[in-house]
Image (tube, rainbow, N blue to C red):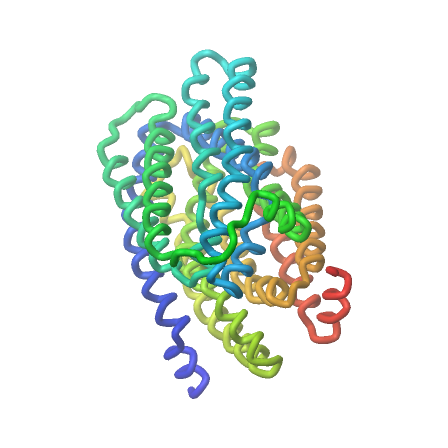
Length: 419
């Protein structure tokens, strides 16, 4: 009872619950509208939009650089450098994104049919939005509540626009709304960021500082690529083996399972600045608070995950209809994968704070390789079930390795390897 009372009164619990409630409300409205929009555009068109978004995410990995966790850690430890770090990272990513956007326009002109080419150009806009994403800044400064408020407003606006859709909407209708609101929310984050960062009196950090950070962040770059492959890349694997309707159904399962992140990310994204503070207070304090986080995360994660699994068939009957029914069983695997990933974030941030960057890379690459190999072997025989099961396997392996690497007997050894 005392442990439960302590966890319930913690600042992380209060902040996480407030963010979760805000996001649950906005995303619930957005989910209903998105399901309606999916029916209006049809499973095939919905699948095409998913492929465009997935390719845009994949191309965005080229300028990701693995910088987010490294820069967030730097900002949490040295807030006075926030403005300079933001400028350096933004210049680096945007310069590459502009070139990639141009290549996107040229390549899609050559490879995509004339009927779909205009819709595919929305992917180039997504590249620029991804380059200007500021999650690392808000996370490092402990201002994620502000960022989530912007995201919630964007979701509500998306829902309002989707609610105006009618049957047999043309290809890309849903994507136009998604990209347009992405542009607006990105602009809003930059406006807000200019008000929360204090003026810097430190020497300016030029772009070469980014290349210094890349000396460490390349490991997280590989992690980002691996995470993409064992989750979103499943859509591209499926596109070689199953009809577009099945891809649309699987994408619907990804969206529904992603609803768990409304709650989960509200908590695990708050860990970094707290872990930095606890780590500075000493090993005993850090270990005690981390155990508290484990109990809290298990308690938070079980209820929504179990509820989603038990109601999966009802969700599809009510919101999607028979055309998307194939997503019901994969959803069970994907929900379990989300829960395991949620618990694994405790140990992932432990490794980040301990600067066990090589351990993070090793764990993620191992799990991702196993996931992709299983998917490639089984997806032609078992379709979307194989893709979902391989995602669950990948998350289980990664979390198990992160836990093992974060044990005291392994901490110093992997820290030396990182250096």
